[in-house]
Image 1 (cartoon, rainbow, N blue to C red):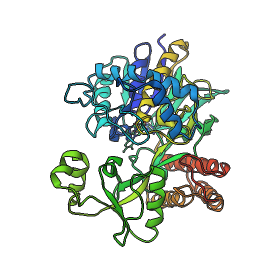
Image 2: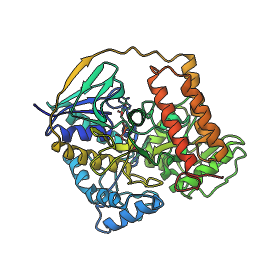
Image 3: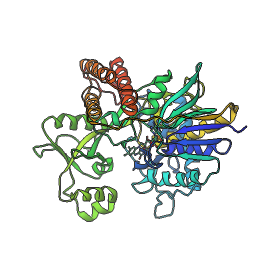
Image 4: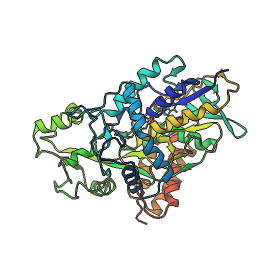
Length: 471
Ligand SMILES: Cc1cc2nc3c(=O)[nH]c(=O)nc-3n(C[C@H](O)[C@H](O)[C@H](O)COP(=O)(O)OP(=O)(O)OC[C@H]3O[C@@H](n4cnc5c(N)ncnc54)[C@H](O)[C@@H]3O)c2cc1C
């Protein structure tokens, strides 16, 4: 009998793992929306790897540890950094056309916290390009079955072992279940994460009894374009790097725009209490802006805004979940049979704050390590039992509860935290949880992860990395 692996999620972690597992197993890839819908598809900047002649593994390791406030697992950092180059090559072999410099070599760019140029990218649309290459490969693989628009609901456990996955369509019993469901940005009202990122995998694992770590470390990004009722859109750090200003409601600059992300986020957040905050790039020409930031320029143009003429309304946003379900260096969680990779996992790479462009790298390295480890497991009993579950459509009450939850998280578990705020936040989230129907799957998952984030933040009394407490 062939081994069967069920993978939940079609971001870069899930797709890459599916492709590698398919070399030795049958793979079922379950994803709740269309295959492209994921944070991965929106990644702009790139993937970090030591590729330049001036760079060294020791420098990438040092930068990762500094960004993570030395809360990282050193051993994990070392192996991820050392394995990075081989995965960039694997993506090139799959057809990803990374941007090249005028000499025809990989164009290595630099981002905040990196001491060297080491980010490979495809213009400002890296995630989309990598997703497309991986999707093309998994679609053509005879051992991979893709199941789109299928929401995973829960893990199936026998004794203390995960033996399968329940989805809206039924029960899949398999030899291994791999969660690759991404982070939990949607627990906040303002986030760069798309609507599918509701923390489902983390919540499923927690319900099943798996251990999670470092959930309090939520990375906020200081500048996303925001208009009420619209999904925030990331305004890359490179805008400030190239000289954009930040202005408050009185039109005054209030912060050194080049300070680290968390400091700028706190400053913007404080200013927002008095009114709207803006990004201002009116001092540069249209030709420069259009040429340097084509994606951002075009997105703003859809709302009839031009970078060279208009003040752009911004907000800080929840961007990245540094913690997650705790795993070892083979993707194994604390529950036998359950593997977790990508943003849903806590591998120890990021510590208390993620270094830019290390997250796609983490997806690749641990997807590969997990796929390799799974060659060791035996094929057991596999089958599918159909049982359709009808889920209620979101109504005014559930939409209201979702907004209430997100607002509690913004105030209590957001950029600036306090003991009193966190304590009342936990109570408010528990009250919301108690009022939910378990068939409100995503909302229930959001509430479970929200409570876990607040509880972890309450336990960590001191500020560290991207966790900031005033008392
Ligand atoms: C705007 C933006 C820009 C970024 N830029 C960068 C960058 O330049 N470099 C970098 O390294 N990182 C970047 N990041 C972070 C990085 O993109 C993510 O950490 C990474 O893509 C996560 O990949 P993943 O495969 O773990 O999860 P995701 O890509 O989020 O995929 C999760 C998948 O799981 C599916 N899913 C979720 N719940 C369920 C369920 N219950 N049932 C079935 N399917 C489910 C989703 O539909 C989705 O397919 C960025 C993130 C954002 C949002």
